Length: 481
Image: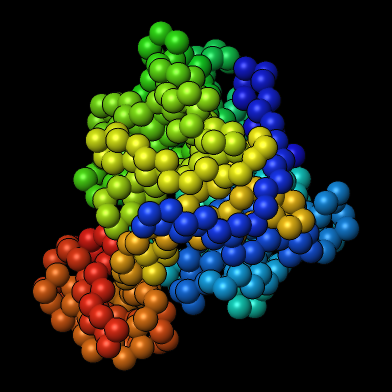
């Protein structure tokens, strides 16, 4: 059972839920449980999925696998096909004392080169967690945390536009031990950019503490994130930080009486197409069940929605995962409780704050915690932390009728740069166009194209024409100087 502990001395326990594998059809949408974990291929997929360049979903499970060095296993890396076949890629803690790490708690990140990077919350040489790389040759531990440079990375890493990796740890760092922001080179040289709680008295930590979520890099190459607690009111913060470690606290939650603006932002932010950041808080708001909010790069904050506004929380409650902006411009997310059976929901919310509950997980009770990913076929995929045939978690699909699209990796590059374009039906592609400029390209597979950013290209949408149709990129490709 996963515990999320904050500096107020409270522990939020995720209640394991058993729900049946089922298919529910609603107008213009279909929910399908496509597979159940069985322990040997993983147990409790807390982090959700990413779609890789081969079109398959990849993720981590917190427990399970073949190692006998941990109760319930030490966690796995897995691959899942659209048809639901799960393959375990790696089982953690293959050796005594777990030098390769244990308990991966965060999503994976795939680089433009096709390699995967991730973190384990514990294990490594010092048992404070690790950063690892997975290539065709296998898994390599790039860094074992020392506590003085951070401990327990609950979040994954992202690749910055400068080619380095950036992430957070929930504890450790110089003196205060309340969490860090770090930068790491592709070969594993780690620099602590910032240690939280260096300001003020502990507690509270005026600059925030215990960041549990991943960072997001803006178009201006500034990183943004949240701390789960701390700040001026001890309700958590939103912050920005440069690649050299200059941190600014943009907002401190619980600024309003009764935490009407939200409290405990356990999940991270996303930057929407309009340049504004969106996120969730686990609790607080007008009804105490958490919120959806927006915040500008300058720190202008707006609460968009408060959960548990309907009888018995039919709209969901306690969101514990980040949002995703889909190709229709709306945001999609999950709640860990509430809904018709108090087992969590999937919801859609417009940029103006109009929320629609799309699906309520069957009960009784429990937590659906992982976020969603929109695959290039237009559908959403996600994981449940428990439930399924063996009560070890599931992978599900939600089809709401959105069209297929293509995705550029990385999402930015200078003219002449080689990029990958991911999709679902790319065999036979006849043209690739960057905002009106034709590009030289090679079709690698039905799910991948390699292309060169054309000279004279401007920031804009990529268009791919294949025998099955014309596909547009989900976001504008940013052309660098």
